[in-house]
Amino acid sequence: MTDIRKFAVEETAVLHLKDANDELMYADGADGKPDTNKPMRITLYGPGSKKFAKVQAANNNKLFSRLKKKGKEDQSADDKAQESADTLTALTHSFENIGYDELGGEALHRAVYLDTSIGFIATQVNTHLNDWANFTKASATN
Image 1 (tube, rainbow, N blue to C red):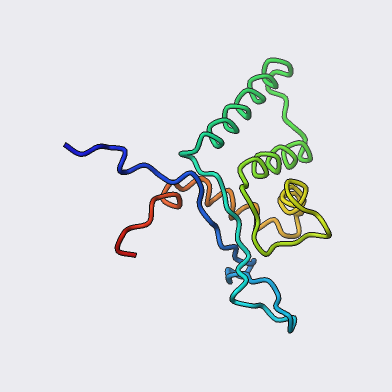
Image 2: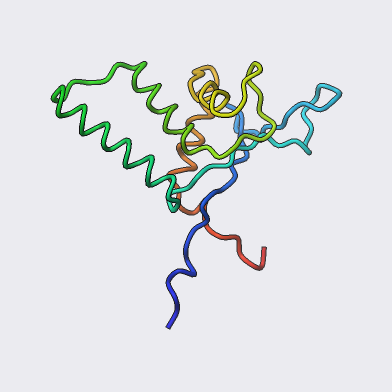
């Protein structure tokens, strides 16, 4: 008999960001050109983590509260964007080689996720988070 837990996923996974042209993104080196030794990456808490479950439960509670108070009234676009950014920020462990003004930590994460001019980043993060395969343990043969 095989212990089913051998198929458990990792708590976090790393997403190497791609630009709007689907090219891998790298931070600039000293010469001002992309440095392949500086990948722009985000480490995320995955669907098998306690952090993910906690964030999803909080989001469900907010949804049910809204429905109780307002019936089926829609959220404004700004409210939806803020809630989405808050969710992604809560599920972000860290950024690597990513800057935005002089921000750091959660303020940096939130600013990136709220900026519609780089909205493809939030889209990538959502897609990555919703695929359990991204959080599988690396094979011993890799």
